[in-house]
Length: 222
Image (cartoon, rainbow, N blue to C red; front, side, top):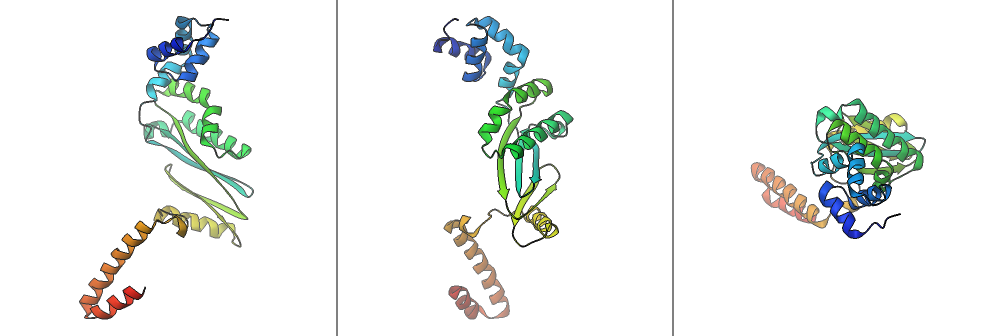
């Protein structure tokens, strides 16, 4: 077998725009023949996918799935809402979601590696960049989820609640779009900023009703 040198990999990368590992794999399969490697990459769609990789994937879907007391929320991106509704794209996202739940996979890089060949083939077929962006999991006594359209998804875990209540909580989360999940997630800077906003609101109300001093004192004590 021919030696796959760094310079050969570099040349193939420059000519195709594909990633280093993809180039090394193609050269290995072609026994070091760079022209054959390029031909094989063209057939597999790897070159087209590499060129599309620079395109911003700003649309897509968020999907959730619950299996018993374990749930996954997943985001898969594409470039346009037209492709986001495509049956092939939806099937790909569902397949990734199923694999994440079955294997309890929360590392997005593991999912990317597992589905890279299918992703490349789909990119070549539909002509848009596709990206498995992020994945997260929750475990709990009771799980609930809610989806609003394709771009908003919520997964909630709770104790001592029924499924209907948890689902309603998920709906409220989707509607309110909170920036933080837990109090400890909120930075001191955000707390101070919000304090000043609420203080200004209280002061304006106090001035309107002639109770400025009392309001200021109450705000300071808070």
